Image 1 (cartoon, rainbow, N blue to C red):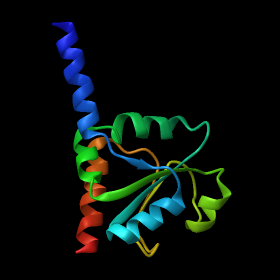
Image 2 (image 1 turned 45 degrees about the vertical axis):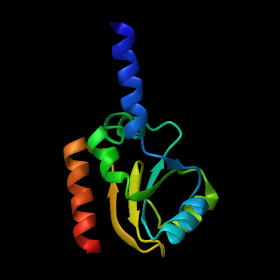
Image 3 (image 1 turned 135 degrees about the vertical axis):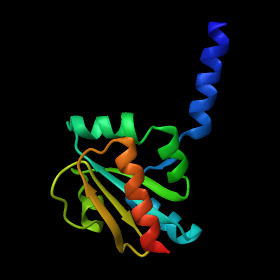
Length: 129
């Protein structure tokens, strides 16, 4: 019985996991090709709030489902190439919702729980309509 439950958990996690792009340049290229908006998570090497955001909020099934229509990418604040493409940040975690042409739709700074983050996604989607 335990093996069945474990199998179902593993299967559900693969069904709902967001496919994160490896770098900002690839994300921008893919967004242009697929005509999608981009969600960029800027995180810091030792940022505990970034880790909480990734493990609690961004890994939530409802959030992952909503992010399927975006090209999503994680970048490190220490990555000079990525930071040269993005607007200046005030702290981490910072999330940018951007159009394929790099125009910022919405910027949020800090940790957000699932409910609040879903509210930001709603705001972004209202602005793009």
